Image 1 (cartoon, rainbow, N blue to C red):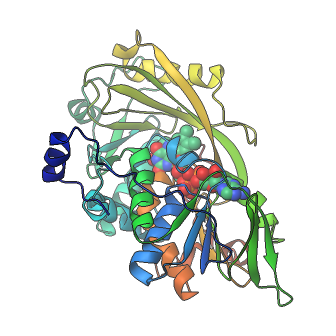
Image 2: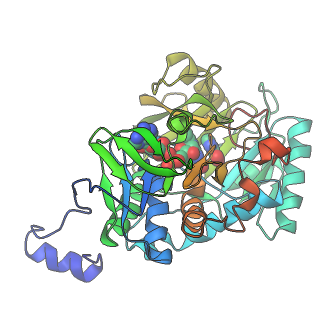
Length: 417
Ligand code: FAD
Ligand code: PYC
């Protein structure tokens, strides 16, 4: 694999940048693989990377019906944090944050992880109680989180309006300083490049249309738009389309798929130093390194597979943003879009073996899975390679919906809490 470094940049610069190699191959689909991953989003690609790197499985295909990173991975607002309430969630998301901290070095690819701080605004007494509970629970788990007064919040993020005369005044905030953002495309590209270098075949523009099972019920392969592929292990990592893919094996999933929308502004000079989330009014905002304000909303009210933005959602969210940071009132918005998020009844993911031997599923990340990408891939690779869950993944079994052992991270929420 070509290495990226200052030296290689200078060397290629001297020869007119003509010698760079493509980041991954465009291989033909082989008739058989040891493992097939369905879906080349960040989670699927990370799973393949760690399967190859840490478990020595080299004969892997990642099959993607569109282009890699074109699903929610390339559509999200890139907020990274680990300030979840329950011990199980804290362990999972903190595992991911620790991997984020070294990911650019691990992949030799700049994923632009920026720990600029994630601030969650409280607007009601209930918010204050709930966020303080999170602060205490996180600190007991060794995860940084602190409570700020409105004045301290404004000091950390000067554009905030802390006047008491608005619809939802800011009454305080929880701040995770190690939280932040990363460049979403780069995460998909970095894992794709790393997996490809370890021999993983990434097959784009190829839809999985069926899952074949043998007389004992175990997986024997997948049907695709490019033909049949034999395999004994299939990992489904298809986000909003997981229910559709799992139904191919006869399994009904505890998932609902909703559009979640986001939008970006015209680019401006650095003006917004951190990430701000307001779950109460369903608005969150950060500024990309390109200068665009990256703004997101709550989920749409209805289930749907429509990956589109809608004006009324943008209007509602911008109403809130203009109240929170009035200096943005004259900004123009450039584009909006939607992604289909896979939501479980307890708003926690599923990382699990299934009742079908050889079939594994990684889904249910809903509105909040980007932050988990490295950790999710890491523990799911273990689950597939060893046919038993990684200890961090064990509580996130699909069986919890049968047994009632839920991990209820705000089931009423319209965005991740
Ligand atoms: P995806 O990237 O969606 O990958 C799944 C892939 O499966 C897709 O590429 C799809 O084409 C493919 N696929 C589906 N069916 C088939 C098939 N039959 N055959 C082959 N391939 C198939 N999370 C955060 O942590 N922070 C945020 O700030 C945040 N903001 C968000 C904002 C928006 C607007 C959206 C939509 C999501 C947001 N999320 C956020 C959630 C996050 O984007 C997702 O949880 C995460 O990216 C899921 O990654 P994935 O790899 O599982 O899914
Ligand atoms: O999970 O932090 C998050 C998030 C913010 C916006 C959407 N998801």
